[in-house]
Length: 366
Image 1 (cartoon, rainbow, N blue to C red):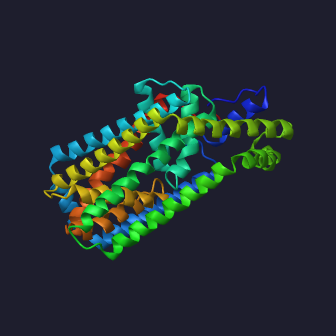
Image 2 (spheres, rainbow, N blue to C red; image 1 turned 180 degrees about the vertical axis):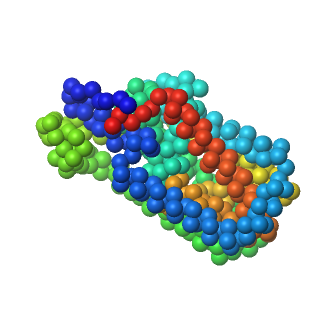
Image 3 (cartoon, helix red, strand yellow; image 1 turned 120 degrees about the horizontal axis):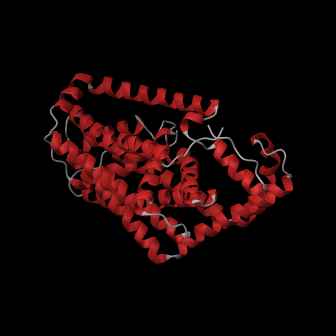
């Protein structure tokens, strides 16, 4: 186990604190470990209810009937999605002056997805860990890594909204939009709208936040092991970091060429997910209209905001709830297809990301 070196200034101390408190999963503090296990128990409970309602035997029979080559194709397409979105992260970091080789960017993004998938609330829970991973691998500041991964997550929302409206619009011309779908769309619109409003307010009042928030936080940093540093020094350093944080966001927003490239890569990633789910259904002998999956995949992923590790259980239930009425396929086959798909986009990144975090040498230092 590594031990922290004595920091020479407040900035180094804060970086060290991030490493101590945002380390790998095995070194989580007791309260974080407890929250993780509670979330895991919740995911198991949701899965148990889903399997009980649909029928475990019928789901298993559907899974055993899957064509192995098409299951492999599902995983290959999911790998393409992961590669494309790792290029997103690489492009965003390039805008911030952080250069990263293609191979390393894939490992870093896989590690970021791993962090998202094993922490409650999906991206919101995994971003601090992902930012630490980026900063350690690229030798950049923590706030730069945070802007990088947060920008990728936010920009992924733009194509997803477009896909929802395109998919639902086409679906509405072929069938009546049911109550479940209306509720899902309404919930997604409200959630996304609330996030956009909060982001807009934070951006508008960023100067006030930079001046006010460090003064509130700095006196309490002693609880994180920084009591030997002057609170005024810490306050100045925090304000400086927050200023750079907002400057980095502005750099991304004003670089139109890179911004367009990032949004384009995001769209490609979503489409790879659509084709992967099509392959999962094909493995079971079913054909699903692609326009249905265009809106089902983004809407189901909204369930990732639930306090479950990476939305595990909640997202699967959302998929089944949306796909059964819109496709007309029996629930057991839909559940089996969703499990194959989620094995590719959830469990495979956990394995790859966990391995990449280990390979990159990221360890907790406590």
